[in-house]
Length: 296
Ligand code: OGA
Ligand code: MN
Image 1: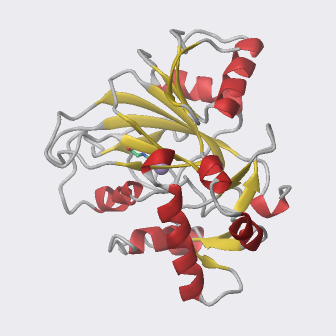
Image 2 (image 1 turned 30 degrees about the vertical axis):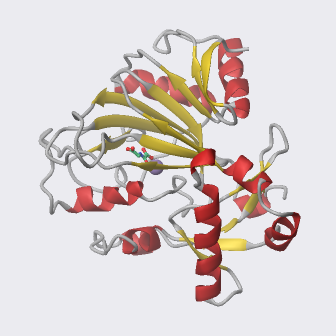
């Protein structure tokens, strides 16, 4: 078992004891981390110092890695490795992006409660976010990342609600999550490249059999229902699932590496001073099958 320093939330978040993730890890060490994630799907490692190559190589021990929407775009990019997501407000020349910069506006979708890449036919599993540069405190917030436990949220539903939503399928669409913040200026061809995907609303975690709600800002409506009814149900469920009792707020320190399981948590970034650099790097593992093909 991975040694832990402390629980950060009794249901789902913990801080691991000191370990250097840049050093080669044994199979047993990887299995220990995997087991810890099953119990605590938000797992915090402090005081890491990983190059992008080291972050990629560490993450790849847990599965094949995603190349995200932003890295898949043509043109110059700030980071060299496509499997490393650029979770920053910096442009290709390492300058803070202007307020009207389209990539900045697109990335503000991360401020809505979501699970990553749920609009993909085969979505992702582990997100691994490493803090490189952090902004100073601001009146609007300090750029924290909040996480919410979708297993606990599912468990807290009434029996009748759980039965009623058991087999629902939801359409997830990245253009819907962006439309909610008024962002519609996507690069040419991107709408065709990322069509919506159907996902189960209730999923079962393969490692411990727990059921979980699969919600996201990308979740647009319930397949087979009038759009408005489905959207209203999704809003109700999201309000339920993001109550403070289900939430852990992560106050970043430089060197943190936070791993979360996108199948059973949602997360959102919090505001910060947009004139100051915030630079985090993310590696993400891919799932193996569409959620509709996974056991209910
Ligand atoms: C992400 C994300 C939020 C943040 O990296 O997937 O949503 O606080 N980040 O940067
Ligand atoms: Mn995200």
